[in-house]
Amino acid sequence: MKKLSAFFLSKVLHKKIYDEFNDSIGKLCDIYVTTEDGLPRAIGYKIKKDGEVLNCEFKNIAFYEDDDRIIIKGEGVREIILQKYSYLLSKHLLDRQIVDINGKKLVRVNDLRIAEIAGELRVVAVDTGVLALGRRLGVENMVKGCYKLFNKKPADSLIIWDNVESLEMVNNNLKLSVTYKKLSKLHPADLADIFEDMDINYRKKVFESLDQNLAADILEEIEPDVQADIIENLSQSKRDEVLDNMPNDEIADILDEVDEETAEKILLSMEKEDADEVRTLMQYEDETVGSIMNKDFIDFNINITVEETIELLRETNPEDEVSHYIYITDQQERLQGVVSLKALIMSDPKNKLREIMLTNIVKINDNENIDEAIEMCSKYDLLSLPVVDSSEKLCGVVIMSDIVEDILIPTWRKRFKKVG
Image (cartoon, rainbow, N blue to C red; front, side, top):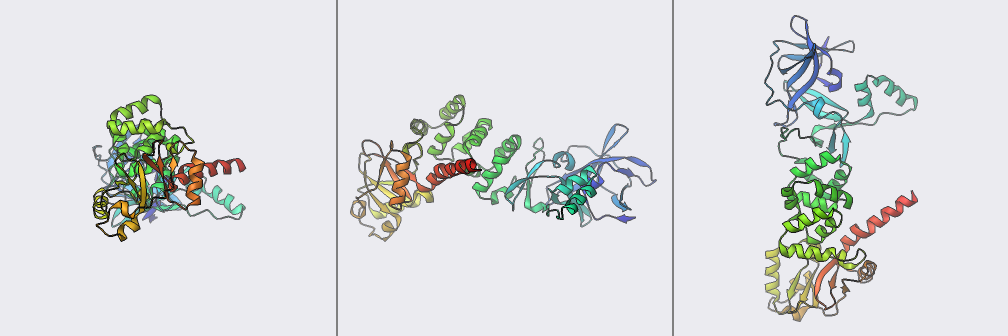
């Protein structure tokens, strides 16, 4: 009889446990773990006998194998009180969704690899493969035979625990060392793909726990129908936090997708100036430039100096995507000129903006068709395009990256689906 230092959870579940007198004390139903110190560590186990369930401390228990038969031995079995032992491997992890951090995707937990480290049993890996399912169902050899029949090898399906993030928070009792810390290493666009595939209940739980800045970045990248679902199901406090970190043009796009009651609640919770701006953006027709323009642009009065402008830029710290061009306006906020960031830095600090700006401006009206904006950005090789209203007031900018993400990519996807 060989003592096991590593095994799969499915191999030991529902197996009899024998005491020091070789009497059966019940079958192993599940294992309790704590995640407070790295890899999940076994701290208790659940046994069932004659309809009665006992929760026992994970001490003096060992796992053996004898001719492919698993034998579990327990000495001095002691029952425990449940408060601190609320995370169960089978109940809360098997068949659940987790994030494969390296693969940047959701995977299903089909089995768990457990190993002895420094005298303690810990979960070291997740098995997401077909063989793991076969192992649990008792048909592992049959699955292997099918692979052999087709001259194929099972894909490597073990993912080490450090490369996964559990999405299951059981009654808020599962305490990760830092909540969803591993997720923050991924790009918001990758996280958006993961959230779109996520079970609706997990999605809400995870989103509620995310840092508000990361949550806002992810929401901007998610498909409109999923955006609406998230916003409609978030708690009001979390929803307000997330939207407070998003530009008004993105909020307007989201509110176009949610139900009227939710949209009105959100607008009423916003600052009046922001709410008015969002309402204005929502009034634009879908195919117009105004419907996709960004309201977070950089503009300065024509009479301030280069030195003053640079100081104001340092204070406001604008986003990279709106920092390509600085727009110059008069007292009535009408567009008068444009200057690149490079030209600004290279100019005499004492010069006024009117002295260094370019006045031959490529611009577009807010009611023009989006196709016209795409053509102008392409023709003049622009990263962003100023948008003016009927009185020549600067009212926004169209950013080329937004056109690609919001217009071109969805259009290409639709075409590919039709071809497929």
